[in-house]
Length: 271
Image (cartoon, rainbow, N blue to C red; front, side):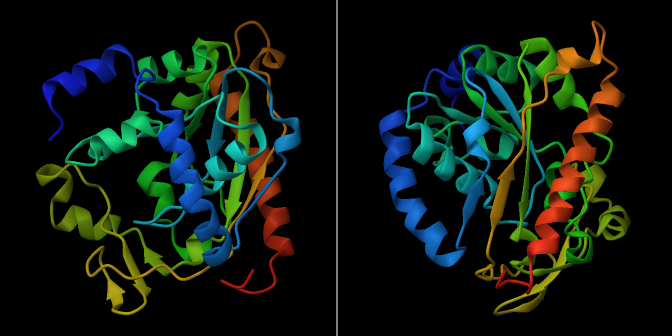
């Protein structure tokens, strides 16, 4: 587990330990892999706004989501390392011996206080409202934007006074054949009470075939394309914006963009 000192420092200053030198080294190692294995592309960065911005994206890839590495690699390549990319993340990231590494490369605990601090510092904050519900969506629903009714990201952008930058990614849900989130199975096994887990995803992949998280299959080399969309100024929704209205608009423009990416795609995995 992370030490109390680490927890205290992160809670007090979630952005203070970001290390641009380490981040640049990591991106230098990841970028060739992402381009060779996933033939990754990031489009639409020319209109990215200055200052703090909340990037709202769909989430794909199960145990091995490539959304953040692909976006961050493209962002840093275009803009350099003067403005950090932070990712709102589950607490499990901050346990064990790798916790310090994740903190230094921009991962921060997912709560409103940390989001506000990162955004007001001028950083770019990436959030996946759908979380594990989204990242394990069935492959047959891979091109559907579904946040499971979660709208907290709108309030985060409102509180910090920053634009929402929608982004959509395609290809991550083809790294395996995702069959089911396994919500019924998780409930049957009472995982929600034992481990606060509401899903037990079932997938089929290489080399082990059928998997319910375990055994761990190797992700297929699916082509991943991320499209960054025009920023949305919440002020356009009036002095007292309706959170549900903003959320509906964000999901609408994301769904349209994802549909366009899907129309471009000719073959699963190959792209």
